Length: 105
Image (cartoon, rainbow, N blue to C red; front, side):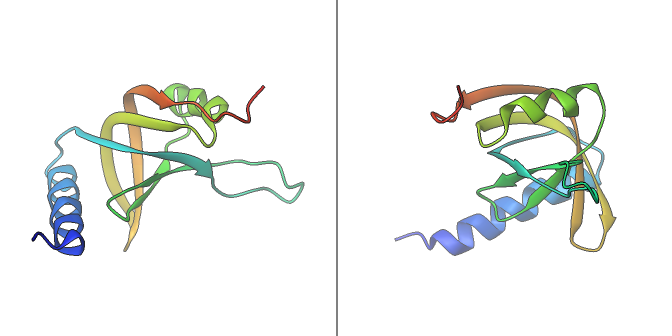
């Protein structure tokens, strides 16, 4: 029987190491709210992954497109960098919406 925790940790390690080598990565996750400004306007979003790593989505053209997919399940391709120890940013190069939030209307 495979220990799910070990499999997740190994997968996370492979993704982060590939990213640190400058390779484009592909991950699945859910787009969730990030930080808000003093007026409580959302100014950043995060990709929360099954690998127990949250990637702050870079605020560029592709990143801003994902604001309309809040709480949707997506598969993204992109390049990552470590902003601070344990804080990762992903620059999205491509994405696919896998499952749209049923509460959107």
